[in-house]
Length: 500
Image (tube, rainbow, N blue to C red; front, side):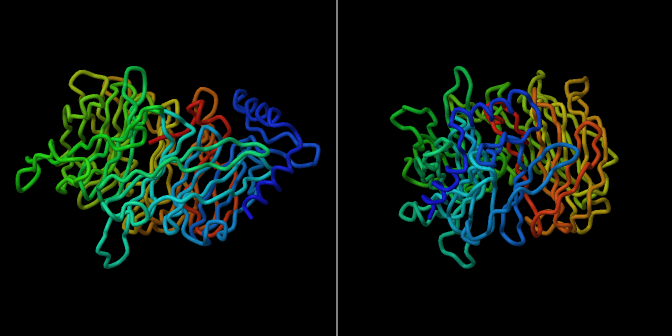
């Protein structure tokens, strides 16, 4: 069936593979919002931006072509049966122009070809580990995708956090690494390179060390275990994609009993878990260091990718901050949280580029009454967007705040509010079912062009012009839309993807 599907949609395109590549390259280099040039058979290979929308209610995936202030439309919706009728998870695209999407309950990763045919097409579901949750593009090779297998979470399980597909013998979760293959007639689908067991339970997030003079490594933290697995990311190395080290995040000053010394613990033996609860990890291209947020301790650890030691920590105890991100240039750690009891979203930054790494806590009265929501920087770092979280107790809901982030480099740093955008009502957020999801279309030198926001209760997405911050069009999609991924050919290589 899958082979026949590949043959069918390959036949839609009668231009050569080179012609398709040139179409995609032209769209990328010009920065225009364009659709594909029709092939002689009347169809077109898509090259313009597409917003992929996870319809959580019916487990389908809608593809919305993003043309500008008008003309935006659903070009197709991929049926739930293609995804084995399970809930759809995190999405990411590769530099080879494939889209990957986690299928947690199926222990698989779906692959989607967004470019070859007139509409995006599902290809194959690749085997992963137990319950893949987060997914990343490798910054050392954009054709490689990593998915985090968080492991067993069945009610009453005796193996919580274990990847029962690949790591049942040794226990713990894992990561599955895939390569995107290449698009075009006769091409093969993406493949799994390796699944690596890391002996650690809990929710997993990852960052990659990269750049001149820096060892190429993947850093994968696990909340329950309280540690970071270090995996060799140097292609051609004899230990490529193998776990070579582990970093114990235990801090005796934050524990009721002293931490164990794990320095001599073998790679085949699990560490003793601690209460650090790492959740959030970033790489700074400025400092060339890894930053891991320990929710259990309320601190951020700065880790050297060479020595694999914690150089310093930023203690956030007593502050409202419970999560963080990083600016695209790697200079600012963006802090986000709320007070207890809640009074509204609080934001701050740690300036990694200034001596003493000072912290600035912002006073933004417009955020009072909001609950914390998702945020993203435009890829040039000049715009910052944050959603109101729509918690039931919030007094301000259905809002997107647009900030000028270029003023972060002022003295003192500042986030300058540009617009408070009223959204279509999305209902109250319930657990992981957010009222709104969003992503940013960045083009040219990384400037924000449009923001695509999902509206769960209204079963729609809104297209917002990033110049005047006005909703230009709303498009109906599937049932209870959630996460949004904006894709365009060449965006990965150009660095034109919004980040947090």
